[in-house]
Length: 377
Image (cartoon, rainbow, N blue to C red):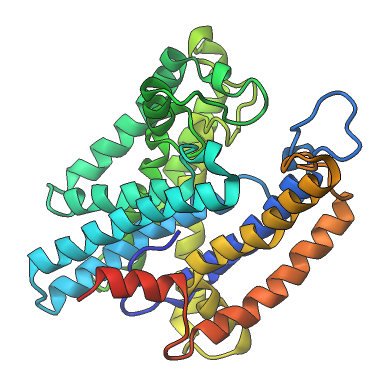
């Protein structure tokens, strides 16, 4: 959920990450509390049934920005003359911390049977380890890796029989080595293929958007983002030519599974959005103002808010289900009407903005302070 902090700090990155927190909270509260409310033709519909819900945008933002932040942080460490081995150790510790933290989160929030659901924390932890390798590789390496991750993903899903893992509308696996490995690589919520391409893309895009070299072309991020969006449109237009065995979803734009058009389109869109905000917000912002201040606090504590927003609605959901029917998941997606779920989401966001500023105080406990204590000298 979080990567090393960018130096110097860019207000546009904070705003984008805070926006991702808002989108994530709205979608998850509606998804988990009301996704199948008054549905009679099958459960597990989720927030995707509501056309006005901002589904499918928070996770790409988080993962893309983790690569951007890491690139800016690593470049800043190099500019300060920090020892390369020390940077590598910090990166590896952060990656391992996030992977282990992700497993603990799955057990404590989603219950032990979902320990290997391969959620976004384990993906970003994996990305930290991959970015350490990419940092030492030739400049073309991350571009080649992105192409392979995106291009091979449909093939791997077809070989692994992706649909069989999602027959109930959510990722359902057996506790076998094969299912766990397939979930990590291709069939889980955020598998390596293709999701690892997003932090790698952020790593590549960072100097294009936020580079300090005055001689760099100001048109490069617009060109790169525009080409990716055009490529996404072309891929979706050519969908009828794709062999049927490689099609794991009927929709052209889908997050589960992440279709090729979705991955290319979100990467391109985020490059364009980051470039636009950098040229407007960063160029004239001194970091002051209540919205920028709150966005900065929420961005700095995105890992804490990721955990807290789940605890705030999932734990009461499990408790209510156990009390009402003897099963923790008895009320999943049918606990409240949609307006009530939205109201709870807004209430949590107000609380989250206040909590983030409290966690900014020196010595205040947070997931981020724990990460720094364990991972940084």
